[in-house]
Image (cartoon, rainbow, N blue to C red; front, top):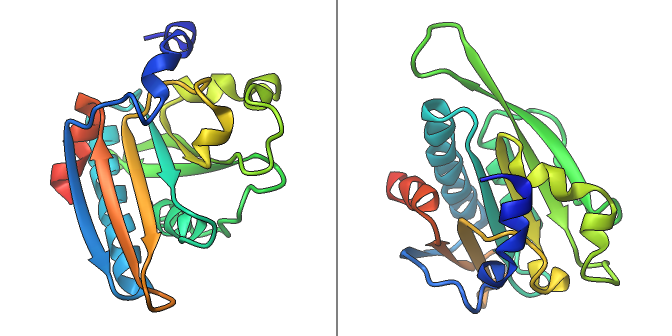
Length: 192
């Protein structure tokens, strides 16, 4: 599906109107457990990209301030073997990370994809992400990980996966719910 067609499906991108195909919830008592869940999701995404190098997924990352969204994003991106610093895109809106995945078919071949990490918290206008020229990222091989998607109202393309984080009673305790909204998203979740 081309970029324009995806953007025209805006009513489907609203998490309230999207219907999950599959969901799973995990209670993480400490950050290490949250990191393991993020790395398991990275493994599922890697397998999808090995089989379909041109694949693209849109992933929403939702939760209250301090729920651990950026921490989950950091562990997810590092789960691909990314060794650099993964920083919050709060002021830049988007941080791209080139990820390399070993091909499952050919020895020595590496598949390159990009993880685009968005933080829309400081957006003042729902269309600001498009005006900044970020629409093209929503079709590039890899995935877009969007924190605070509600700030864009219903202007984002449809999500394949939603990650909801809720803080627990202890500081490092989290409840994490992963929901698939597309067949592509569904193929990633069972691999967790």
